[in-house]
Amino acid sequence: MIYPIVAYGHPVLKKRAKNIEKGEIDVLQLAEDMFETMHAASGIGLAAPQIGKSIRMFIVDSSPMEEEDLMDFKKVFINPEIIEEEGEEWAFEEGCLSIPTIREDVNRNGKLRIRYFDENWEEKEEEFDGLKARIIQHEYDHIEGILFTDHLSAFKKRLLKGKLSNISKGNVKVDYRMTFPNR
Ligand code: NI
Image 1: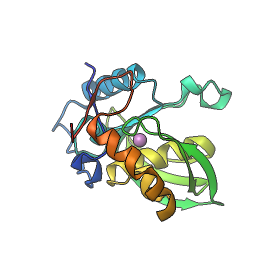
Image 2: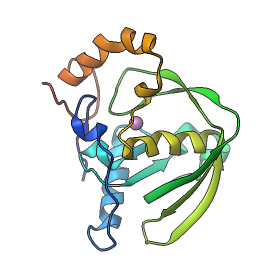
Image 3: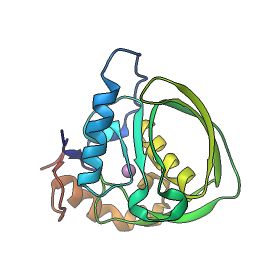
Image 4: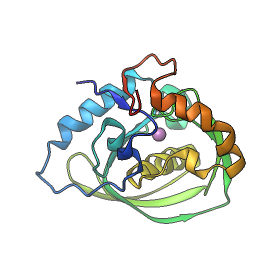
């Protein structure tokens, strides 16, 4: 099932999401639906708040980036916890399915260690760096109620204000289904 993606300005994107109790929801089904929704929108990451669910779950699949070490990076993260972030900060241009047409450089640490449950409720602890870490940091932010635009300078935010307000009203060209909070 393809969910509409919640656009910038919706309160669910600014809320810290809640942990999922094992058995509370069908995480296998939800993961499948999230992958379907994300692929239909050509995304490489999607967090549950972006489909209106304030729960701590996100998915990644960077195979569309067609880079060798990113081809097999397809994962489900449930109740994740970043337990360490380190390494030099580096800038990379990010975008977000909830904020179509806007792309901006964001600075983030190069490396992280994360503990999470996969879709079979198996607990994992892993380290990631480079673009994998980057994608995880962006999605992890979503379940903390943070958007990549929150990391921008006050100056940049001011420049983007009109564009962001238009996105929240649905005045944006996008080729996947969305819900706009201020339409
Ligand atoms: Ni995003």
